[in-house]
Image 1 (cartoon, rainbow, N blue to C red):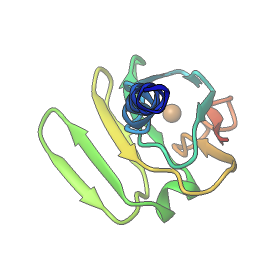
Image 2: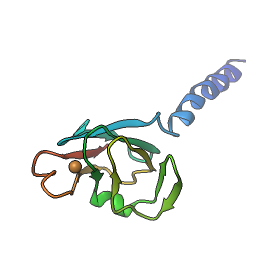
Image 3: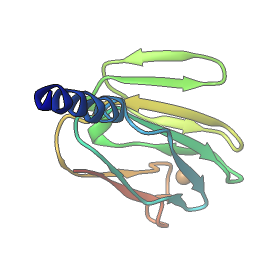
Length: 131
Ligand SMILES: [Cu+2]
């Protein structure tokens, strides 16, 4: 009897953990002149991550990270969904939004930036903190 109860408890405890591994909801990342909000994005290694980028600025911005070139990514915007073995850049016009979904496979702090001329220098950069 005692044994059965323990097994039941184990099952109850296991389910929330399993669903947590699918990852939390999208993380909103806003782009403006000249910053990403938030500038530090913390995500868990091995857990699916969805970053939702919204350009709230008056000009185009883009998200570029060396790290993203090394992981398979599912990119979505209002028009289409693509799966790529790595992503060079995500460029958004004012008012546009898109999501990037991926599973970070190694821990570390990885820089990202908007590489449109002058933007990074003006402060439009950040860190993807994978822990
Ligand atoms: Cu920019």
